[in-house]
Length: 401
Image (cartoon, rainbow, N blue to C red; front, side):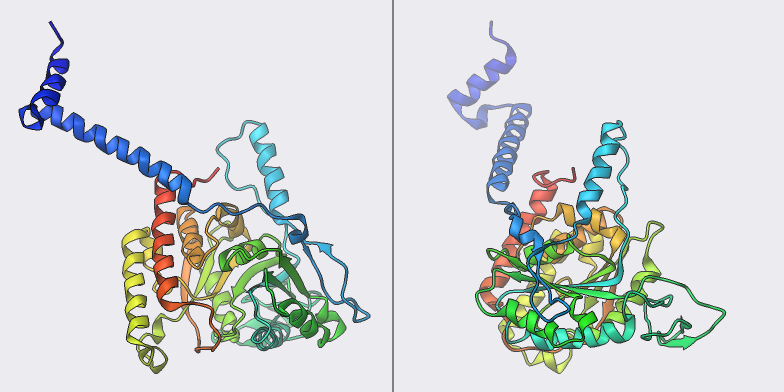
């Protein structure tokens, strides 16, 4: 006599689903869900983006020498190599629980990463504003700095005041790293982006010119790929990435520095997100097309649905003006997968999963002509990328290793 379960299966196959008992129907439903989940996992493995390998030439940079000539290609610093060595040493000793392996000490106070794809027409203006501000506020690396990171060039008796400006006090001073650097990542540019960056550096004084570094990706990766690449090779205590169009008011960097210092955890980890959310009702936004505003609000709704709570609470995830503390980088950059417009969201989700504090900071912003964003198609692409990104992390296709 056949077992009851065989009898039930034969009954379903012979007489149809109406003849099956409830528990067999439940078993079939679970089996179907399991098969669908496995098929969906395979689908994600196929479609989820995997960044291409980094070429040797992409780990080098050029800058302007003291005599005004362009340097030969030099190796970029790479903090992750030291991080990986420490991680491997801990694993070799059997320490599988540790996650904080430290990172190389910073050499300057602020690093600016600028992703640039065919930006010969807009890059110069943005760099001029950025360098003028950083030189004024953070000076060269040999000078002292204040508690909020601001500095007056050549002064060593400065302190942070309640309004964020600097005052002088010979009895109260926190010595801290100073100085700045700029790393421009040409994302497979076909125009004169690299030449524009180097010519700008050549226009500066000798000491400042050497602080402008230009790295070139052989093929276009996308904005996210260029930003991630640049952030692997920074030397700053704080790392800002900013769009090459100069739409963000650069002097608002001071706001981000002050806010990130307020929220940093005991390990010095923190992220400050420049935000345009306060401008939603402004003329700049209202006068946009109905389609653009509709897509903006739809994307915000999708973010709220698909992302974890802290990320969903960020009102402007896409502003190209974000500041990271150096200790936060190892918890975010090595695990990045997205190289498209949606990469900001992955950064914020990784920060949230590592319990890194995040502050959203209102900044000044204005529309700049020459955007490469196709409002309709890129918005649809971002929605698709967000769905795949969230699913890949949720299903274990992506994971921290």
